[in-house]
Image 1: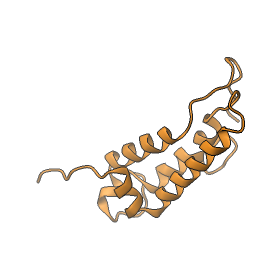
Image 2: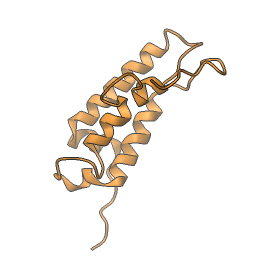
Image 3: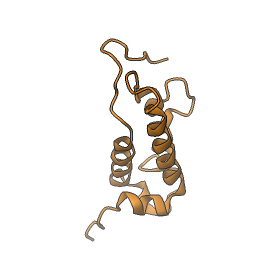
Length: 107
């Protein structure tokens, strides 16, 4: 049986409201980053250094892809759905603007 075409990011957000919530969180973070345009780093937000939930990336890993607990709909359990959402969410964040060597250390 041929593999079904990959979902778009918007389709993923429609099928899984938690991904739409992550999208809103990334947009809000991008807005906050404008407040410190010369010292912003997305890594703590993305990786969740001080967040037991693992930041956006950790939350995404639990709701899409092979680690998804709910097997339905099956297309949300695919590596493809995870990659599309991962790349789309990360693209919503601004580039880091901190000075070299000022990268926040993992906690």
